[in-house]
Image (tube, rainbow, N blue to C red; front, side):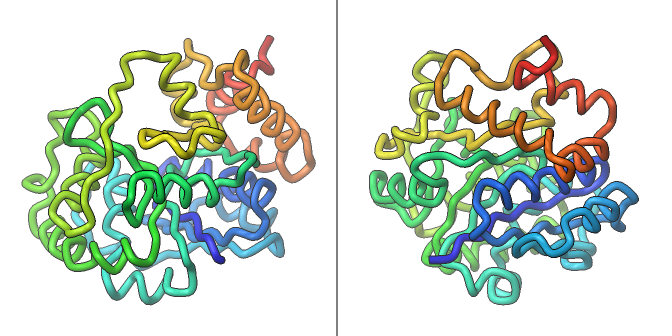
Length: 288
């Protein structure tokens, strides 16, 4: 069984990519990683690629997503347009499952492993993918675990949105509402034949944290973190992004601290801006 983790990055998100890849290779060395880069490869990413050379199965893919109109956070939208028939065959056909995630995520090892959690969640909801609907009834979470059955079922719908996006992105995206990129994902799934997942209202924070626990993957509204979102910690400097009072979250913090203390981890972390480094340290309690 082969699992691929993929995302699309552009602009300053390239700085996160080396640490993103290293965290995945450390947590799940048997996974494959495909990162699509929208712009020219920047200095920090180029340095990171040298640091990671020879470690596991990862690829930085350029030139595949160049002919799109510019818009804010373009990479966030394009990750949901990866499953056209041509791109699915070229980049993902060898994998049983593909996990679309954020490019600023640090992944940590969990028990059971990430793919086991999501396959179990797929069985719980009776769908060929793992995701849930957020508190907004027209938004899926941006972290999508997809089987080949899902990829084949949505290909035609993805191609329609892909063509629409190229011609008139402003009409396809509703940037006046929250999570416009995840709204695009919702529309793709809604308009295909695969069916929508359950909805969860994140009003009760303790409930949200319980449903993020890796052990609760059998719950229909399971919504795991799988580590730390560095960008969210940078965007919300007053907020710790890991609840250190929860055992599974404290374990994630411990693994991240161990990772960035290694020579390669430290070198990858130094590719971040000073503010990003401080946000990461603060999020795992290392600033105290």
